[in-house]
Amino acid sequence: MADESVAQDQLRAFIERIERMEEEKAAIAADIKEIYAEAKGNGFDTKVIREIVRIRKQDASERQEHEAILELYMSALGMVAGPANDD
Image 1: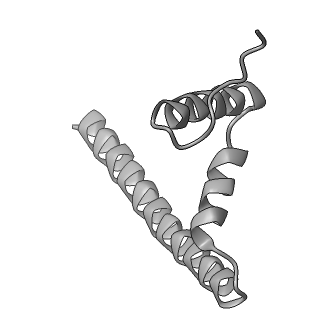
Image 2: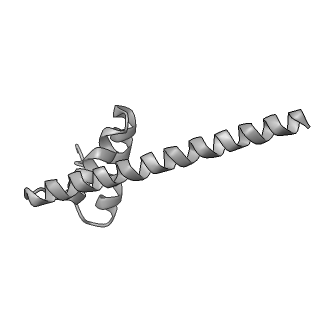
Image 3: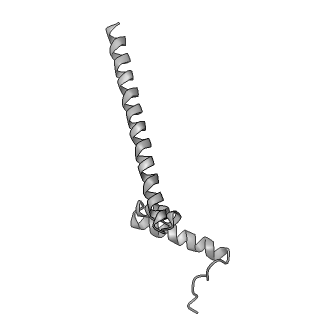
């Protein structure tokens, strides 16, 4: 019975810690939303800011790979000039 009580206490503690972290996460998300609203109010394009934040999370090689694939796809769709041919 004591082992069951310890397990219940541990489970309760885990759940309560998760709940506290979820509350903190929600508060942080609200703070981030306010920062984006402030940036927008100052004339910045928040869509671009979000993209920059996402890009800055990537390491250099990951970013270069993403940019190369993006350029390739855009070129295939005629959205940019294709790679230069050195004939």
